[in-house]
Image (cartoon, rainbow, N blue to C red; front, side, top):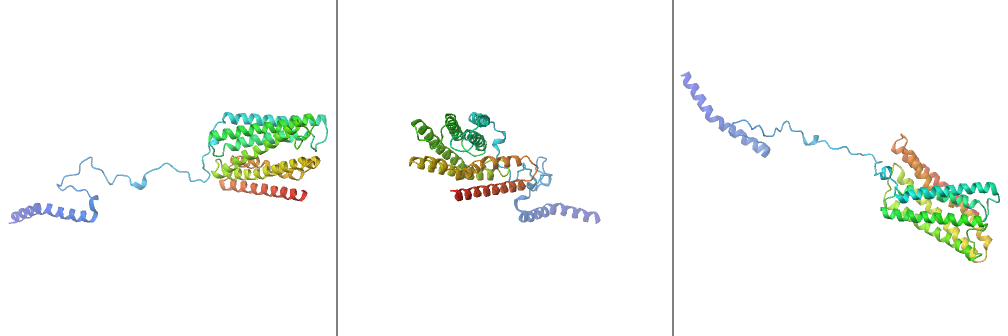
Length: 325
């Protein structure tokens, strides 16, 4: 009897086993959907079936690290070689600086007054100022986002204009006659008017670069964008001061007040000189700070402080111009 019972129990188990297994699988499918793969025939899964337990989770997928540092704009000028027009501008700027230094030696040997419409001061100061400005503009223009052709045209015209200005002023200094507002002879009038037209061209070119720096964020290290934009903004103030000097001097000269025309620029000279070189001082500071181990926030804070100090100096020069006018 025991053997018969065991055989019956074994036979029932063989018949009910598949039924129970299918029922369990149906319940699991209803609970988990199609994500459950089954093999109803009781065989082991094939060897090429995906092993879901050993597959890496989707959240563990590795990605290349992204820089979250705010000081990571594209810095093309760092590794970019200067273009031919940029190299030419650097050479011309250095030549103008050398010209100013040579005329400083001429002044030391020849003597004469330092102030006044006829003096060696003008070729000295204009040579140094235009040379440094040309070098500075060529350098900072590499951080301004412009088309290559546009940058080439602006720099080429700017360099030619700087040569024209310094050459005209130097020529008149060697001739012993005033360079600006001199309408006494046709030749002097031509030189004076060419300097005035050249000054207008400088205003147009530098204003175009200033606008470009505000339209698209300049490249460079931390604080460079602020330094460029502030430098160009202050530079425009200096250009407006220079335009006011030329306009008033030409008006007084045309109306028969030659000496008054020469003296009319004295009050605006400090404002013109201080504002003109902000585009060199502020970006150089930002570039020097980029080589320090200080944090990005510290460097930007220092650039902001420098911009504030420079703005105070410009306001002071403007107040002096209004008071001394």
